[in-house]
Picture 1: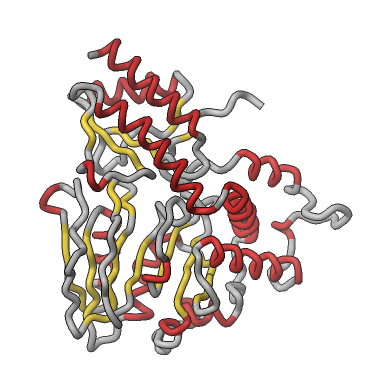
Picture 2 (picture 1 turned 120 degrees about the horizontal axis):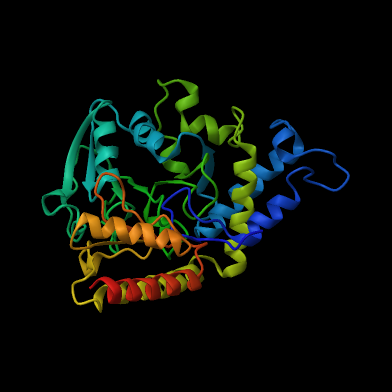
Length: 363
């Protein structure tokens, strides 16, 4: 194998090398003597049923949650959950409250607006998404169906460190970019969803964690395939799941547990992000961090440079130097390094050194 690149792609993102190597070894034949790949097995068979059950258990364990929660595996990515959350939990007599902190949070709010009444509870759009709203003292109206927030903003590189007290109103979160990347009190939330392609596995499968009590309140008037209840009752095997993506998630969860879980990941991710943020902050303005310092994400590090031409040159030279995925999101431009769990410390150290060298040559 050629030397692996420093992968800072935002998703599909880096996967742990031991996971990839194990998956390679079992690609053609999952079990010795079985004569079959996991991708060829029936989702009604015992092997896939056991795989789904064990992956559900591992995810709840990793999130620090007990028997009052269910873990589900669904398709469509987090974007499908924007609609499914509202379909299941936004009745006509209620209004859903959305905290807008970035582009994907705004998309979730917009999607729900097709299905029922929505309300913006707080927003930092006026400052260009450079910060997150202050959640202290957030008022939740009596007609609120739920409060929705995005805990980490992938495009802008910001995150929440404080979460609102919503009382009896369910708190729903898109945790696509930071679930298991840091310690989070997941018991504060009634519904959590996350596209796997950041910290959980490959693209093609979405993890959903839902409190049993909320599950009982879900709509019974929508098609079965769109109900969380359907997936809970059928162990996420109501329809044919992406079995290989599920298998890969199981391997990633095993790897995460072996590293020490979310607590160990948080410590490592903080050290990784500090290397890159220090390169930004010591540059004397050559690099300018996009996010307000107090709201900076450890998962997605964003910055700008003096001109778009200089940014394009940075990306071109970084690719020649073995880096991948440093261009910012197409909607905002700039630069972004997504340092998810599987990105090693050495990659962030190499990026910081490259940034220092590029500044010396172009400053």
